[in-house]
Amino acid sequence: MAFLEVQDLTLYYDTHRGPVRAVDRVSFALEKGEALGIVGESGCGKSSITLALIRVLPKNVHTYTGSVRLDGRELLAFSDEEFRRQIRWRKISMAFQGAMNVLNPVLKVGYQIAEPLLQDGQIPKEKAFARVREILQLVGLSPETAERFPHELSGGMKQRVVLATALVFNPSLVILDEPTSALDVSVQAQIMNLLKKLKSELGLTFIFITHDIALASDLCDRLGIAYAGQLVEEGPIEEILQRPTHPYTQGLLESMPLLHSDKSPSFIPGAPPGLIDPPKGCRFAPRCPYVFERCEQPPPLCVTPHGSRALCWLLAEPAPLSLKREREQG
Ligand SMILES: Nc1ncnc2c1ncn2[C@@H]1O[C@H](COP(=O)(O)OP(=O)(O)OP(=O)(O)O)[C@@H](O)[C@H]1O
Ligand SMILES: [Mg+2]
Picture 1 (cartoon, rainbow, N blue to C red):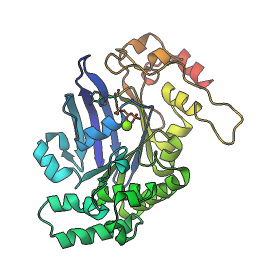
Picture 2 (picture 1 turned 180 degrees about the vertical axis):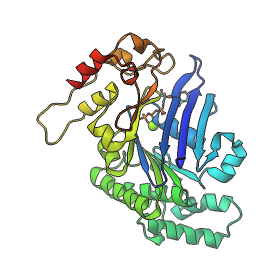
Picture 3 (picture 1 turned 45 degrees about the vertical axis):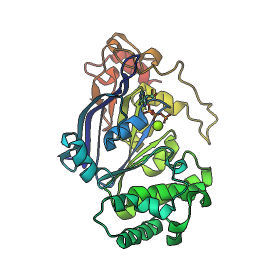
């Protein structure tokens, strides 16, 4: 059994126009110490997947179902109170999208990092602040940073503070939602190096959300491609990059400009569907160059010959051979 096993995770939001199917039967597995990158266009449900995992849900939840097994324990069976006491921050922590911009401006950063430890009431103040100094050093900041206010810090330092808040309870799974997208490229590289160091030295398991496949490949062992609320392909990162099987993954990779190639990037025609009334069958079908009759039905999750999994009728048996051949010939 893998360290993290997510099966059919589903999260819909209630709106006056109907439920928004932000996360629809998402499945993946991750071993301890591995990092999974999740990439996909804006609005495809990346943040919603992370919120479903750490169970930070808005009031307008319509459906929240599926299975999340961490170290063999089914987390969806936990009550909200049990989850808050035992899992959130302690076992699964998260650096929320844009968190570095919402640090409390009137509180010293040391206090903000210590806050969850102090809330607990079980850890004496002195011990909590000793932990803060330790964790600041772990993320590459001096212990004196604890005495500073957020406005006194650079963007890169603020992002390190956000990481420190996520690491304070020594969790085993850390979710990072676009941790570097507000940073300039050189600071971004420093944060990526820090994440790689934390991964190798602490054996942390990461879920890393990004728009940027190049960044994901710097840190991650596995890659998930999100499209319209679903994970359309997931597997070992080198397989996905070298042998993408889902037509959306292929299109996404072809749309990335390559530094050392004179081939100009191509674009996927059309736009992703709305999540209130997405296509009944394959959600990518309206944009897919290989679409055929079966795509009107929801596609099965198929295992590819290279160990990744994709939601696509082209991989199902019996395979439509003519289409497969056409695809292999490019
Ligand atoms: N509380 C909510 N109520 C209704 N719809 C929501 C709510 N939160 C998010 N959504 C919608 O759910 C979909 C998925 O949003 P989500 O923020 O998960 O996407 P994302 O992939 O993280 O996007 P981005 O790359 O811009 O951060 C979007 O259509 C969004 O508008
Ligand atoms: Mg997001």
